[in-house]
Image (cartoon, rainbow, N blue to C red):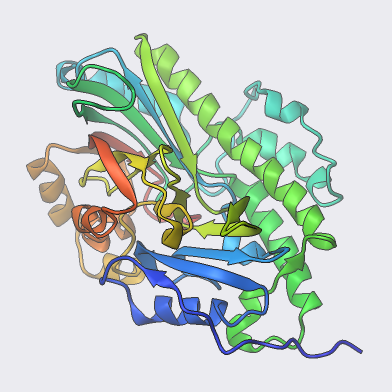
Amino acid sequence: MRRPTRLRSGLGYAVWGEDIDEPAHQQMRNACRLPVTVAAALMPDAHVGYGLPIGGVLATDNAVIPYAVGVDIACRVKLTVFDLPPEELERRPARFESILERDTLFGVGGAWRGQRPAHAVMDEDWGVTPFTAGLKDLAWSQLGTSGSGNHFVEFGELELRAGNPLGLEARRYLGVVSHSGSRGSGARTCDYYSRVARELHPHLPKELSYLAWLPLDGVGAEYWAAMELMGKYASANHDVIHRKLVRSVGADVLFQIENHHNFAWKETHGGRELIVHRKGATPAGRGVLGYIPGSMTAPGYLVEGLGDPASLDSASHGAGRRMSRVKARETTRWSHLRAYLAERGVRLISAGLDESPHAYKDIDAVMRAQAGLVRPVARFQPRLVKMAPEGEKPED
């Protein structure tokens, strides 16, 4: 007979930003009650999620929590910057719109027809766990595609600041950013191992059931191997997308930056090896470069991490939602959104109303709140945006 799990009264956690809803705080307080929790932090883009809030950072001892990693395992953003001025978008708008239409594919069931893209990730050992062995065909069919929800591919203008760590001239460049993750394979992996974790801890109270953990010296090692595979696969998705885009744009690439969230890392903090979960939070160790998006009209920022120990070397992964998807649909109209986009010089190929910019927090307020976590080195303004069309079930 299993003994009931003993919970602690709760640790404290560091918080950045004030525009965070109470349910997100409650989820963090719940996470801090777990006996495996060592430290925690909440980023300024935080909002309520499943188990751990989006924007939550949780460090545990010898344990991994599938739902603290998230459904879209290893979701990430990737930025490619070309040796071209952004005015190219204005000179040839139809060309760049055609590139996005041809080279990207969105949606929950999105999969390429005909010949599948080639990538070394499909030569990985997909039998690394009994569960992932059955995912290879699905993964290959979706390789190089994007999900729904807040996933996007967008062309825009990057304004690089003087004294940037890339050593490049401070001027404006044409760039493209993608945001997506491990697609159906990652979602199925999360679902399976979350059920395994809940079965291991049947006495957890309802509010903690989605925070059930797996010991790393047990079945957690199996989940870890699956998570690492999903990380390689998510990176491969972006690699395929950007290879196509680079070929179609036909210009030299100056640099690329890629960073991920919805993952767990083995890191040393306070002289102790911990498992650091970043669900909707991104690594921001000292000198680490990353990209933090805003919305389809708000800017994103290329940043350099400052390595704040209280944040467990973390920062936000975006602006963060301030409004549910249902409320976003209820409070806007396509006519209003189109006018708003036109005022800001943004062309939208496709998206759902639930991704309306007013559903998101002010990215500049978020950046001010985490000024001690990251230093902006460039600003990216979206100009041509493609997301999953209206009616798609969110996958983020």
